[in-house]
Length: 118
Image (cartoon, rainbow, N blue to C red; front, side):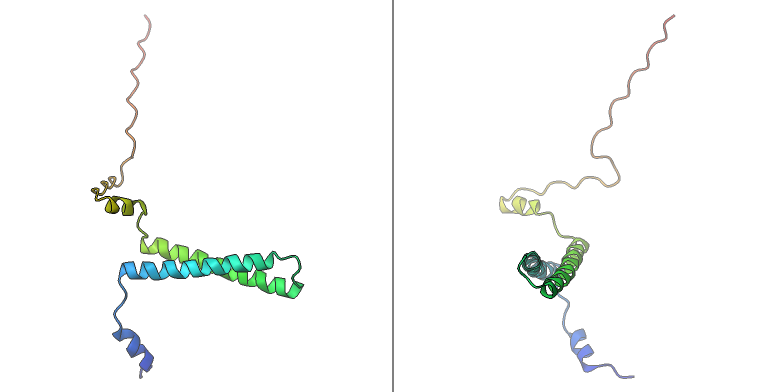
């Protein structure tokens, strides 16, 4: 069993780093979003032939699903919080991460039990 030579070329390339993958997905997301906007405008044109409008709506649905998948890919890659860029820009120390599994807000103080009237 021999493998396709293209497979060997693929395996020899190093995988892009995580920030590089995020950048590539963001660029593709911007491109797909622009395409979605273009087809949305085209499908909304009242002077378009019915066949062309149907084709534009089909392409709009495909572009919308592509945009959704790319957003999920960014979420999977762990898109960093954009506020962290502000901390780095001004040279501030990064905020501490909240402890996992604990409530963010303090619990209310317990109420004192009322005394029974005698």
